[in-house]
Every structure is written in structure tokens, then in C-alpha cells.
Image (cartoon, rainbow, N blue to C red):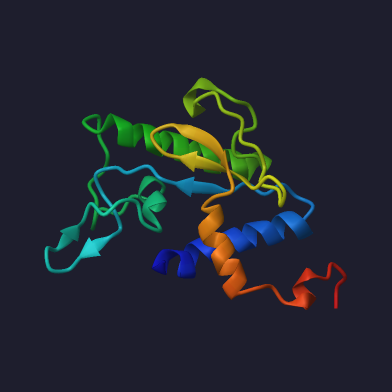
Length: 159
């Protein structure tokens, strides 16, 4: 619940608002790849803990931080593969506006479909890339009830 309240629900709502009020495609993802390291840190053991994937774990595969994690080498082929996939996806998005403009073997031959208010598609970035719909639909609908959008936000006219 803590993660939903501070990150998950807010990001999901932002994706819906961008999809509804923006003319550009919205690409949404959930990073679920669990490598050997995590940003979840336990001070009592002075190391990261294997509690699953946490917020910002995707950045381990984008920016090297030698204070926390060793450089991935040939001895960690799945982590090297994730670095290649993740950086390619972000590079493609920065260059073309589409994270996977053309399906290819390096990116699991998948087409990344944009998020829309109706379909709410997202990419699961795990050991393999896969498309899904309506991330945590039941959980996030409960948050929608607790924090409904104001009538002003729902009005498409500018104020």
C-alpha cells in the first residue's frame, strides 16, 4: 500500500491524464526485472536486500554506481542483457518518441503499444518484455475512490 500511495497510483493517474489531454503517444512500463542488486538498502546489514524490485531499481541498469553495485561483467549475462535492452529502449524513445519503433530480436520481437485511457496498455520489463493491460486495476480503482479528480481537472477547456 505504501508504494501505491506514493508512487504507483500517482504514476498511473499521470499516465491516464497524459493520454487523455496530450496529442503525443504515452508509453508506460513496469520494471519487474530482479537482478542481484536492489536499491532497497538495510542499514543493519550494510547491504542491499532481496525484497523484490523497488522504485528506482531500473536505474541500476542505466547509471553505474560503483559505491553500491559492481560493474556488470561477462559473469552476469542476464544483467548485461538488461543493460542493453533498457538503454536501447530509452535511446529509441529519446531519438524517435517510440521505445521500440521496430520489433527486433534484441528486444524480444515485441511491439510496444501506446497507453490509452481505454486500453491502458503497459510494457512489463522483466526477464522478457511483454505487453499487458490495466496495471493493478483493482488496487488503483480503490485509490481513485479515495482521491477523485476535481471537476476542474476533468474539464478539457483551459481555465
